[in-house]
Length: 336
Image 1 (cartoon, one colour):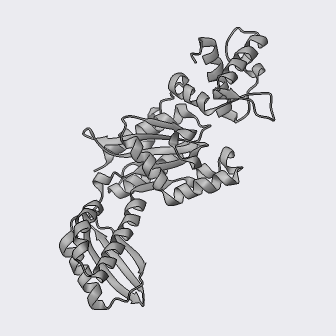
Image 2 (cartoon, helix red, strand yellow; image 1 turned 30 degrees about the vertical axis):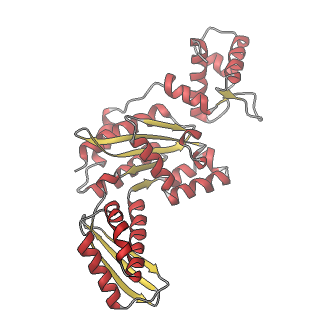
Image 3 (cartoon, helix red, strand yellow; image 1 turned 135 degrees about the horizontal axis):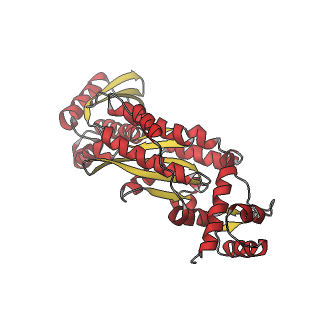
């Protein structure tokens, strides 16, 4: 449905008011704030047309109207007027992105996104930039419990405890450590997986179990460290979500498992520029009441990763979108 200028103005005014205070907007408010020379009856007629077209709905408790996801989508695509960050805000943002290493820089970016928007900030570290194995060691803790120590080429150290059905002596564990280090040092997880597909067929059964366990452990590390998040509590405490226990529970699960967010950000990575997923557009039921705004960060034309903000569908898009955009540009310029 094509909206004429009057309908667009009323829809923009309604959504701006609702974003501001979270309340349904009535025709009287629109009459006094839309700057349109229309009678109350004309405004009510246009509101009815907007409602019939699915852009707004009337809550049971009020005679006013609130935007639907379709209304927000039209607003973001056609009506919103972006509010650029001023020089002092950009300067403050730059100051917060001065870090000695990329790991601290990525964490700072997630924190900054959350601080500036009051929602959840996320940063995806691209698969192409994953660290490689430098060294792995299997140590016996007790019967059926083995400590796996993984050292990566960026100096990171990860420890995981494996629970096994078989008993392994020190010699078994030493052989497994030596085998892994001789064959896979310098490889990332995907490369190790590909090499192991054929080699597992010729290994001893006890070796197969340890190699498989090491890969599964690495997958957990890889997934957790590939996504940095900050400000989850901010999102859960918004008025729209905090009152719905079921929604909170689903969103908490998304944050804990991370896989849905990883897939969503990686899907964004396949497109160029800012991506905006409103409600059900994300494809994940747990995020049906949220909007996700993402942007790639790049250096010399190469996309290094994605960052974004997760908030309720009722968010100040005109402010959050520029924050995500400029933060992505600054991160691309700052990352080493």
